[in-house]
Image (tube, rainbow, N blue to C red; front, side, top):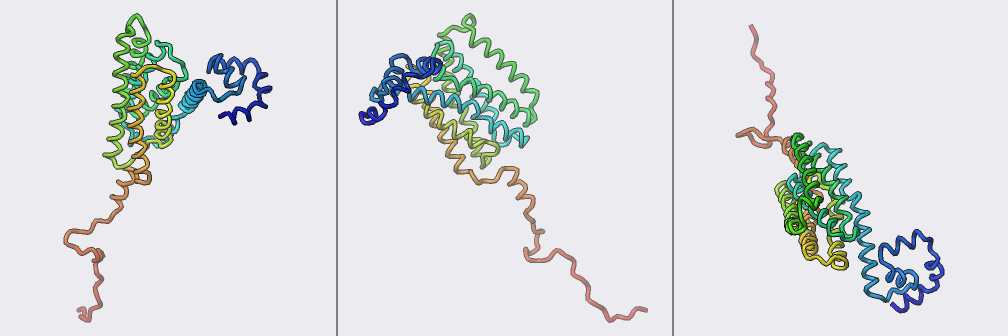
Length: 289
C-alpha cells in the first residue's frame, strides 16, 4: 500500500484543486477526515477510511443499479401479457417487507446510501404486482392492493400513529417477510419446471446487491435486525440464481403445452407404423350387367 501511496502523490495538485461542488459532495459522502486522508493526502493506507469509501461506493452503486433492476421484469410482463412464472404472493410479501424497512430506516435517520434502493425497488414492485394481478385475471384486486399500500404508508411513517418501539417489532417481522417472500417464487419455479417470465437480470442483480448490502451494513449500520435480514435474503437469492441457471434452456409452460398438442397420438389397437389411410381397391374382372 505504501508503494501505491507513493505512486499517487503526483496527483495531489489535481485533488487539492477540485471544484467546490465536487469537494462538498465528497465531504458529504465520506466526511471531512476521510476526505482529507483519501482525496487531499491520497493516502490509501488508512483501513477505516478505505473501508468506509468502499462501503459508500457500493451503496451508491446499488442505489444506481436498483433504479433499473426490475425494469427488464416489467418489460417482460408487458411484452408477453402473461404473468407465468411470477408469484403474486412473493411480490406481496416483498413489497410489505420493503415498505416497513423503508419507514424504519427513514425514521432512524440512517444514511441514505445504506437503504436508498429500498425506495426505488419498492416503486417497481408496486408496478409489477399490479401487472401480475391484471394479467392473471384479477384486475379488481389491484385497486384493493393500492389502497392497502397507501394506508400502510400513512401508518408507518407517522410517529403519532406508530411509535418506534412498535416499528422495531415490525422491522423484525419485515426481515422474516423478506425471507419468506422468496419461498413462493422458488416453489413456483420448481412446480412449473421453468422460470417463465422471471427476469435473469433482476435475479442476478438481487444476488449481487444483497451480498454488497451485507458489507455496507457491517460498515455503516449497527443494527442486527437489518444485517440478519440481508444475510437470509442473500441465501435465498442464491437459490433463485441457481434455479435460473438450472432452468436456463427449459421451455416455458406454454411451449411445453404446444409440444404436447403437436405430438401425434396413435389410435388404440393400431400399430404405430400402420397407415391411417383407407387402402385403395384393386381392379376387378367382374363383368357388369
